[in-house]
Length: 442
Image 1 (cartoon, rainbow, N blue to C red):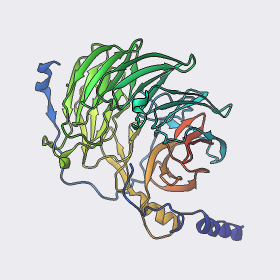
Image 2 (image 1 turned 180 degrees about the vertical axis):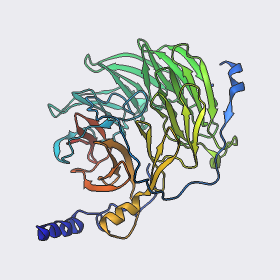
Image 3 (image 1 turned 90 degrees about the vertical axis):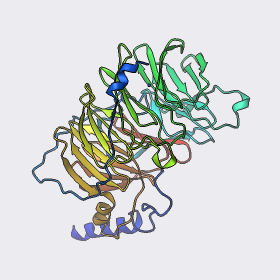
Image 4 (image 1 turned 45 degrees about the vertical axis):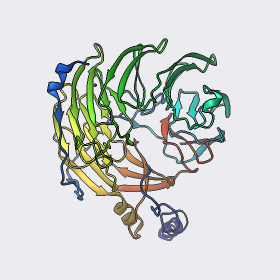
């Protein structure tokens, strides 16, 4: 039995492991990766810390995690899965077997996010095609392209959200349209002239989104007409950060490219409070705001700026905790435990109630210790919590499985090369590969 174990270890390290020839280590480039004037008297600026955290902190051996129960998702209707943008502790079969590989969806580059309604995959490409693909029948059910010939040579960036039979779409030209994919019919279309630049949220009869100039829109689902528009600070110099919207049970959270976080009452649509997360009021390329998406668990709001992580009370907007590090990948909350990664691949966990750092570990070092090889750098693509484990999806299609205490337990490689961000449905991982085919792994 010992001989067999030794043989398997040697085979793994020499053939499919993370040695210098496997391609797992980074060897090129870097990561991919406002109406009522009285309310402004409540404006707060949260200055950034100059002393950035970059330490290894070991977990207290007596610390106990209690994550939320496993949840089996049957659909993925919006970009960040839920109204709160916070993922769940997803159930995953964990066999790492390719159970489905579809036909090529398009010859153009697919956009990074997929949706799934329980039967069909919904994708879009840079040519502006909306693609409805049936996994059961392994074929494209339909393609719809809204655009005229004059936009043929322009790259399209589409944001999608799905509700029942309707796909709502915004783009980088200022168009917003609703398409019924069951009837194969355009329901309505509007041109707002300014490119849209955020995710989309649906709230009862309203659609919520924002544009390049940081205007927040509330639109009628039925016809696309504007219920209300809230102008916020416009950045004269456009940055890479994309406006982000998250919903709690009582409010709409909006983080704009200027670095201001707004809370808006979801009934009256009045501003509750707003806070500046930007490190400087100077608008120059060195001071452009960079942050993470806004996530919440209805008690806490978590968002990061260029250098700091902020934890707010979701109702009052009061600052509960502030940390001198920021999130590189989208952070995750599970039962008052926060999990995030810094840009230098530092895995960090924070207790949201006490604000204490639970641990901080170097992912690259964990890999090198696990494989007993020299430390290098991997390129992380996404973070998901599956089966009570922290899963890191790498750009080169490897998957790292850490337990919640920050220890690396397993390294696998997906059966096909990953291109889009993965989604989890029916205990399986769905993604598009580098050849624009849908892969399903259980």
